[in-house]
Amino acid sequence: MPISVPSQQTVALVRTLGGPVEFVKDYPVKQPSHDEVLAKVLYSGVCQSDLHTRAGTAAGADGKPITAIKLPHVGGHEGVGRIIALGTGIPERDPSIKVGALVGIRFSSRVCRRCEFCLAGTEQYCQGVEDWKPTNHLHHEDGAFQEYICLDAGYITLLPPDVDPVLAAPTLCAGLTAYKAVLNAEVKVGHWVVVVGAGGGLGQYAVQYAIAQGARVIGVDTGSQKEEMVTSFGASFVDFRQTPNIVAEVQRLTSGGAHAVIVAAGSSPAFAQAASMLRIGGTMCCIGIPPGGGHINTTVAEIVIKGLKIKGNLVGSLKECLEAVELVRAGIVKPKVFVRPFSDLPDVYEELERGDIPGRVVLKIGDDLVSSARFSALCCALLARRHLLSSEVFERATDAEPVHLVGAVAEEDRSVVCGKARQHPRL
Ligand SMILES: [Zn+2]
Ligand SMILES: [Zn+2]
Image 1 (cartoon, rainbow, N blue to C red):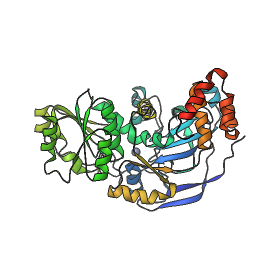
Image 2 (cartoon, protein in one colour):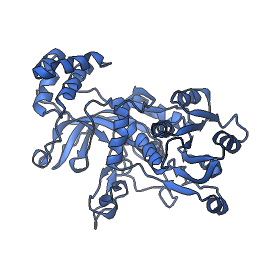
Image 3 (cartoon, helix red, strand yellow):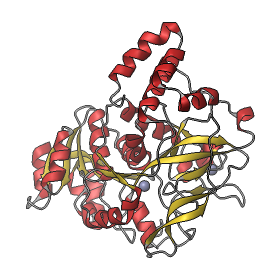
């Protein structure tokens, strides 16, 4: 069954920085060019960076507002979509990219793959070659707050076919950023890690990835909702509004300070005391960016005398992204997400601004091409076959009942498929 693609779509459009979000229903759907895929967007997380870009308050490395933003702007860089069409050149160059595969729509959209940062596996810092500059879905290209998107097949994020797209979406930015911060913290089993802003979108991931590495984690945040979430992951909780001296409390709990403090909150006060929570030789990992760039109020004396390290990271590489996703797929990290309709985006921005959201909001952008029951059966078939589906199988699956699809699997795999199908929560 050929997949029909409309010429127009609904997008969440921002015409001027600081202006409102408008839902426009007649925005053109782009056709995939050479070496591009067209994906139908299913879900997208809402990141604090989207909020700052829309508001015109996103800070660059110099602390000044980033103004080189494509207008009108379509945000969303934590999206998951399903490939529905291939541009020319793909089957010949990379037969692993198929119609029906799940793809990520991430911060980085196009990189040169040849500059020193790309060659070093840190392509999120790509500087381009000659006049060619890299692009991202936050400032330069329309992101996941639209129904259809074209993606560069040369830097595509192919997701495991059996990952839950709802949980994968926020992992592509919040999860990856937190995962990389935990790598930067060089956590060893039994280390103490403090996560400041532990109840937010980034923080919840930092807590879980640090625990997965064997750390003992203290989450700093406020409110009973966030406390409940953070402690449910197995971390301790310090409420900064109810604790008169947070530094003393962390020093007491850790017997001399944490081995690492990950500052996941995007406000300057969150950084103020971070270094004082560290033990000698500890590492401060910075991932939240305060409006205006922010400053760390730590004396040089404290850094020198305690031998501290300060590390920052801008998301992470594609390889690190896939590692972060794999821990979610395997159920080792279980992000707390709230699925809401696409039309809630303006409300979500207001709630994010107030800091009201524990975990992450994921917007449902569009229906999947296959019903959840069919998709589950498809996943099971894939699990058994252990390869990505071909476009032929995918198109048949959109019409087939699950039982037919399961029936189509080779006899020796059938018991595996049926077993998996029974276990699948959505079937
Ligand atoms: Zn982000
Ligand atoms: Zn590059």
